[in-house]
Structures are given as C-alpha cells and as structure tokens.
Image (cartoon, rainbow, N blue to C red; front, side, top):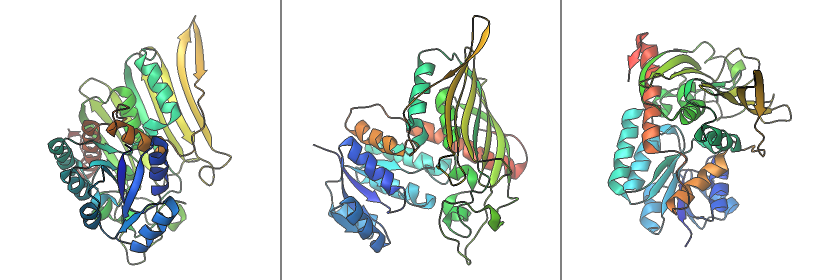
Length: 360
C-alpha cells in the first residue's frame, strides 16, 4: 500500500512536495491551511480529496494519514511537528527545523517517543551533484575534509519587508536561519562533526533598503516588522579539529548570487556551486561540481557531470522521505544532524550578540 500524506500549508513549496510524493508513489489525501481558499485552490491543482482549515481538523477527520508534510512559517514548525508526532504520524518539515535548538530538541524528543521518522527539507543534499560528490567522499577519494567554506550570498535577495520572513518573532532570524542549506551541505560532506566553538557577526546594513528586495518571498507589509539581519560571516570549529567558514546574506555587495560549498581534503579538494542568473534560474545561471587533485606531479581539475536539476533537489528530498517510511532508502538527513545545525545557528546569533566566541 502507498504512503498516505497530509499537507499543512498551501504555500509555494507545495509544488515540490506534491511532485516528490508523486515520484515516490505516495498519495496526498488531505491538506490544511488557515487560509481555506488557498487550501481549496491547492487541492484542485494537485487532486487532493479533503480540505481543512486547521491541522486539528485534518488529524481528527483523516486518521488514516501516515505522514504529514509541514509548509508554514518557522514559528509553527515545532508545535505542528510535535502535534503530528504525538498523533502517531511521520513528519517532513520545511527548513529551518525550528526557531532555535531548544525547540528542535523538543521535536527530536517527540519523534523518539513516538517512534516515528522526523526529517527536514535540506534539499541540496538531494541534488545530483551532491549524490555524486558524496560517492567520491565515501569511496575515500577525498580523504578527510579538514576545512570547508559554506556560502549563500545574495546581492538583492531580501524576501519582502514587514512580512514573517523579516519578523524575528515569526522567523527566528533573517538570512542565517532562512538560508542554512550550504552550512548543512558542508557539514554533510564533512561527516557532520561535533561543533565546538562559533565566532561570528551579523549585519543589518541594507535590511531596510528597498533596492535590495529579491524576486522571492512575500509581499511587503507597511505595518509589519523588519528586525532581522541581512548578512552574517563567521567561523565554526569542531571537536575533530575541522573548521568551517560561513558567509550568508540576503543583501550584500557581491557580483551575483552564489550558492556554494568548497572543501579541502587530505587527498582532494572540491567545489559544488550554483551561480544564479539575473532573474534567478535563467539562461545565465551556471552550475559546477569539481574535484581538485594532484596526479603524476600535475594539478588536475575533474568536472563531475550530472543531469540538470533546476528544483535544487526539492522533489527528490520529499521522495526520499516517503521511501524512508517504506523502508526503501536510508534518510538523507537525521534528527541529530538537524539539532547540531541549529546549535550552530544559535551560536552565530549569540556570538553576534556578545561579540565573543561561543562554546557549543
């Protein structure tokens, strides 16, 4: 029998969740959104049979749901995930896991108690390039990754002004908590070591400048709040001796939007990079995936060629979740890894607040 899913939230990411469920052979049988009209519209688009105005209604009316996908603002990730886990459902949640590490721990505890899978949409792990790079790492071609650099730097990428993205009480923060993907991917390549210290600072230089609004996000709200950072730079050290440097921004004076992980191993270095186009994923966007090695006294750069993936792994990420439930695949991410990531995010904010290194 196919896995039956319920969706909470009818936002833009639903298109990828729905496609991933379809790819995996699962079935979405219900959707809930406090904006009932949005839920009804999504149900018509994706052929979802039952529509509800709240998660409470959906869970009570459709007990045959096996798993729930959560696509809502960050503030509601933890409470909804815990509610669904307590109801005996597997949970797939959009990033970030929660507002902070403490809430993430509560989610982990609930999943452990329920004996259910809890996974998060760190979709860049599901890109073909990431799968290919991990094969080189697992096969020993890279050796031990000693240092890495994680970057998601936008020039004009503030996702609206006054909406939930820029309201700390709703989002937990700005660019750092919105764009943790490359930190996660770098840690994935590094073996997700145990973090030791964080030294970082955040910047709000352009956070109120309408010239830096990006093409993604939500409409501005004149009566809303904008009280988050638009950029952060920092360094994370690990108990293993490994080091990760981080650059994350919604608005920064860079040439073009860059999404990348660069690493240095004892046998090879590597890079996985996407340079966005002027309007996002247009014809000027550039993807690259490379290994750097020394062979026969020569510096050799190997291009890793994979199929194109314009959705940046979002569809495959959801498909993996369903396959994990059905025992067909190993999970692309784990609860413990999500908790480590959120401890680093917390550390970045605490270091910026105190202007000092933070022990994790």
